[in-house]
Length: 281
Image (cartoon, rainbow, N blue to C red; front, top):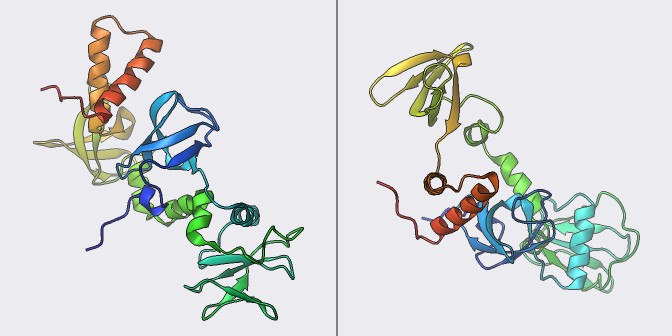
């Protein structure tokens, strides 16, 4: 049975690879910072490090530092500026005759000859660029760019395609709390009643929903509530629970300012990631 690839592996990334942070806001990193991938835990938010420390960053906020040769990088840039890589394509070249980018779905690299220009061996070559190029790219007659090479330089497109291709239910299950929605039926989460347990959350399973009511299952009984009287949050991960416990301990000895809590959260995350945290019993 084939091992299911992580989002990181699908992009061709591995631990130790170098990346540029391309996000605009982050508590640890600034745009342009050079990052190193520290851990791939199978999610889209992975642990990266830089000279300023370590923190989690979404894959959409980083770009792998390209090791492409100048001619290949120029072709990748031209493709990116003209609509991105075509879904069916395995290879791309730039025609020196009509100043367009050609894509091919052939499994083998296209070849070039003096009388025919670029051509495929068995597949189909088609015009791919949305507009003609202004000039020939450097070494266009020697440059063949593969799908993997393009996504090494510009991973954003494959990330977006993967996210769009996920089922609607999967998207809602993972993002309901971000979108301000109720959790879907079957979701295990935490509930807070705004009147009688406003400072406490209980673990429940969503059993059914109507326009005005939600039915939830506790460990030993079921209960229905008016939607306006309750709120829900997703279950915390083991890492999030560990950080909460470390912050609570630090606050109990006087580390309770906003600035010190930011430092404690960073340190707590690093302790957990290093495997140095033992769960509080």
